[in-house]
Image (tube, rainbow, N blue to C red):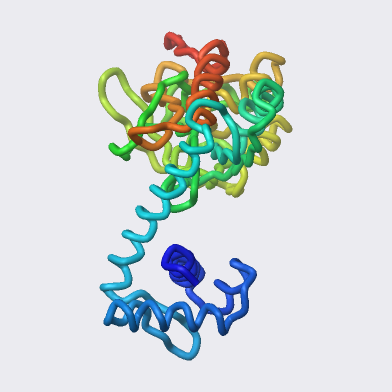
Length: 306
């Protein structure tokens, strides 16, 4: 087993936190994994992994070596891809991540168009309501909603979304339309816990931030569930404007308290900084920027009174 293969084995053991799991991932025998790690530690002259009866942990030296292995193997992949021409021709496997509903409503319908344009690319879409670490989870392109925290990535802004309070017209006819956020303390509130953007309700009162705590009568873990319940006329919920654009346009839901909405949240298409960006990433980022940038439901909206 050469050193590059040993590095791959070491990374698998570290990431899977076990020899047997690493063997299954690499489709080799557990003794082969054990021999590879032992050979590495003997050659390097230090312990990389600390073993117990149940778990495997990285030593301090192992943690540093893991970071070096990731960098070295990534550079090796880039070199091979460059030799194969993937920096000029879109090809290979491309992984993109986005929030669940945004992915279902905006990203998934575009994927087949991209694949039709670039038949040598294979796409994997990871739709999850969490911030996925691009480097650690092998992500090529990510759609981020909200203000960015990372500074080692390229980001292209493609739109904005608002945090809106909405309910069915029938609910407001029975209970009245709130004119101030404080009145929501008396409302039937269904809250989504899928994202911190929706579970923490903040408002703006003129130029001042207004943070109110409510006791929701119903909490659900999926944004679509909160939207469905609001459409039934049971209560009000807070969602992102794109999530209910269709329901608002069709009259199923009505947005209230527009004058108290906090500033809109940006939407970015994000990818890792690199001296050489593969053609599959460049073309997919440009494709998304063009398509999402033209979507009217992701344009900024001037506040009104409601």
